[in-house]
Length: 580
Image (cartoon, rainbow, N blue to C red; front, top):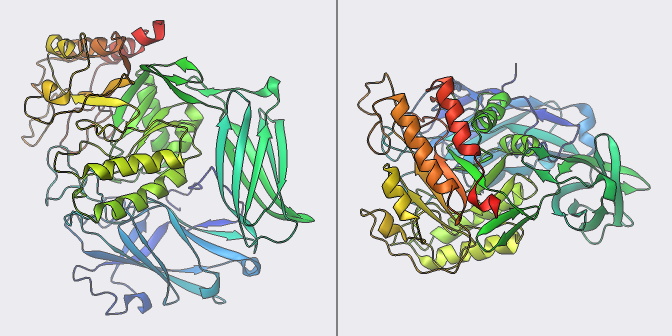
């Protein structure tokens, strides 16, 4: 049985594809000498691994949690005979961090970045019969030159830093495409005008090619459009029939199925996608979804799993995390210090779940001149990959940056983000320092006393150094813009545990009743404040030694059903900003 056998990119689907997850040959290369030893030509590597799970995880079958300078993978593939008449693309969901791929001993290409998808056209390297695929991934989370998120730089996990991920951690797959094909699409909805703009890239276009698009909802055709391919691009405006224009929003996540056909007298290529009609705008202190102020009741989601680390054990596990959150009255999440896989975003789209896309910025020395090149290259890939998802309602490239940073780096990434995607708000850096180029002002505040917490936000917007005495970082004054506490709570709650390594925020409550009262009162402060458009509670689940989740690390309940009902009631009260 192939693990994680579902199609990894449901927003751009073709029929002819092959999942390469499962058993691969594997070895750890701590001396990083594999190239010198020509491991890409080796008949066999010394061990085995189950892809797409990282070697640190139980599901990989390796469970090696020490630092690994490099790791190697190898397997043979047999391709269908009819795949020789077009092009064969080898896709990687994500590999951490510097990757090189060989086909039959010949390099197919390199990629740098631990969180973004990449692919290589391997047609010219294939031969009849069996073909070998070899992969080398180099990883050094201690270098200060690679974004690594919450991956620990120490041997052990500690506080809010967790087990590392090395090498392949998302699905590997092969796709067959014609000699001319649709290589990428960008979907931009216009909710008020009831249309979607489709920008498509065409590989190897021919004269007189045309792109045709058809949108359906509830099985009925909602609109069609076509346009000539000009150069290597085609741009269409697909108008939605007025009586079939349904907005995507929490509680009503209407999605249109989109079928694309590349024609040249006959059908040359076909691909399936989907989109939602959803708009985002800023009005004074509110963030408007489809023109209405919708209070964002967010949860911090780290995206870690006890048996898969960065990788969910099943597609159902991705969906379940969203359903656990929604069952408690949350309508979205900050996807924290990790670029989540596309299947998670697919379920967020399907279930009507708001998410903030974030980069794993921790681990990168921001004052280093190389930081801009390292960060921006990968961040642009994030924006390109995830642009089409209606569930993403904002971007946050950095988290909790520090005063020694290069402020121009933050400004540059903000500018680039807005250039690529002007349709969504961007927070320059979440938590402490805002450099004046940001659409939203946020703070992190783990005060556990509800009365003191309330005083922080009673009459004005405080700067971060006024909130936390141990963080002496002045914030520049900002105009009136949307404002929220993007991390709060984090209540340390580990009933029945005596592990001295457990970690959380503030004093541990003495009882479940004390826990839930604190949760209710802290949340009430934010939801009743007319200056707040959102909150984000830390966090959905425990992660290893961090025990401030509302659920255990294995997603089992930590609280009674009555307590969960009170959390839901606290979360779903009408917010002050929704009453205006």
